[in-house]
Image (cartoon, rainbow, N blue to C red):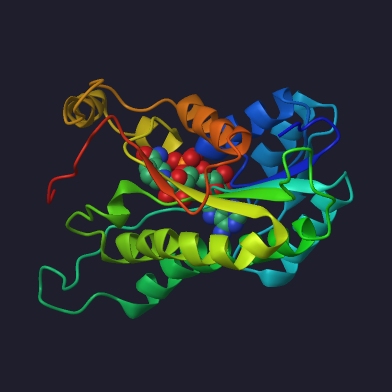
Length: 255
Ligand SMILES: NC(=O)c1ccc[n+]([C@@H]2O[C@H](COP(=O)([O-])OP(=O)(O)OC[C@H]3O[C@@H](n4cnc5c(N)ncnc54)[C@H](O)[C@@H]3O)[C@@H](O)[C@H]2O)c1
């Protein structure tokens, strides 16, 4: 897909995997809208990139803010790419150490961000993409969602996180089927242990231990490796309805 003159939106685009993807999309000539709730980082990145990069302050759990962000992106050219990276994790067990049940509010909080947030921007972006003329390859648009290996190998304390990411995997095929009528492809990336600000906060021994648990190569993933896969999905017109693990072959252990 030729991204010159096209618009792209990246949720969570101000940090980590989203930031790396923003940089790649911008480098490929797209007008990139960084949709993020972190205004300081989002504005700074848009300013650093210059050109057609722009920041849309929004919380993905707030539908009206997502609508405004997607409209802002579509005003910069035909919206052809939407990458959903906004997300986070919590560590809470099904029952706590004192046998009290998992806080239901914490469960709903995470589902709201990781699942409903992805649903919000995916559906709004698809609605905009459906009005595009097809590109020379036939695509009107490409949507990439971010799950996690925790969708498959959820660890102790990942009840909510695995539920949210499993649901993102679950949406992939039906969304691709729904959107096949309008030539929009939908794929999901399920990353393993990626070296983003989240893991950068850990002490070095903990980072080294995580790196050693990867099959090969024995290191954390680089955010640009995620962005590289996102660009490959955009480029490869035959990739649709699929979830791709990006994890150095890791299979997460119970803890
Ligand atoms: N880093 C990893 O090892 C890893 C592994 C598997 C999956 N993931 C997933 O990848 C995605 C990106 O993670 P990351 O490591 O780059 O994290 P990150 O914290 O570096 O970036 C996440 C970005 O999302 C934004 N964000 C969070 N909640 C938001 C909301 N409600 N509305 C708008 N913006 C919001 C944050 O402000 C931040 O800029 C997440 O969905 C995460 O679950 C990460």
